[in-house]
Amino acid sequence: MRALLVSCLICFPAAAQTLSMAGVLVNHVERTIRMVVAGEETATAGPPRVREFDAAWPSPDGNATLLSKSGALYLVRRLDGTIPVWRELRDNGAAIGRAAWSEDSSALALYLPGERKLELWKRDAQGELRRSWEADVAAVQERIQSIAVAPEAREAFLATQGRESGTLWILKRDEQPRMLLPLGRAGEMQLIAGSLYLADRGRNEVLRYSGWDAAPRVETLMMAGHGLADPVGFALLAEEKKLLVASAGTSQVLVLDLRSNQLRDPVALDAPPARFERLGAAPLFVLDAGTAAPARLFDASGQRLLAMTAPAAN
Image 1 (tube, rainbow, N blue to C red):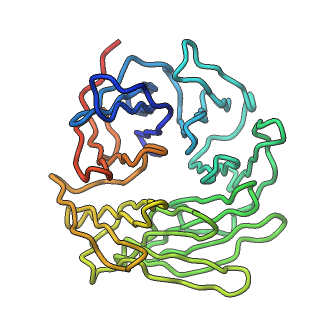
Image 2: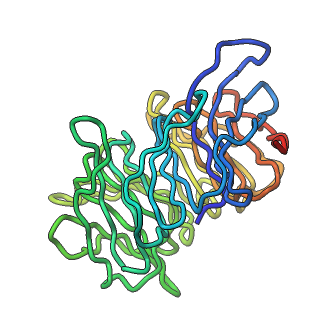
């Protein structure tokens, strides 16, 4: 379970800070959710908006955060408002091991390790999340490392890890899990514009997988020959057609221009990144594993680091 999650939520009017972007900081060590503002060189967290929960997963569009608390499941909206709005999705249920939103925030996948199943949720015509279907994953013996879900919960994907190797799986309604691809060491995974992007930390690669139903195609976008060592996370900047990869083994962010297939100059980091998670629509990413210590943010537009100042106690 990730200890710290950050998701972009709103944009403040320009004031003393040049970037002046706001987001939500979810800290599982403190069990708090705070607003955070990023400036030119630092980012600062405000007072807690929510306290005491078991786990939280912000949606990519920044409009809501899924919370589990004491066995109940909630969707929390308007964290930037005067009072956050809570909606109970269910009042009791099994513990959630992992969760993932679709890229458009229309669907949600929840892994329930105690029941060895994956629940798929999607938004109805009124925009409310409803449970759509579930998949039995008891046949998947390897540890689930990451999850991806398609818009409208059409299908889901698992990247799993065994003792020596990993596997990519696809899940569909009323079907058994189907193996798609062997992996060295399963890493992060994202489903973007109909293609599955995934990091293989064992083989030092970032792959793009498409056509899994008819004509499977696997492309290696970045590899060890590009200087990649232990890709702990990545992001696709769609408008700029760039792939950013956090290379923990070299303490760098590598940038690949997808139009020319050429590498840009790497960005040196002051310490190895533990992950690379985007803060929503803004090109800002969190690099640290998620502890009570201040986090580092990476500004992709300026290719620079932003230090996270310690949040206020109250």
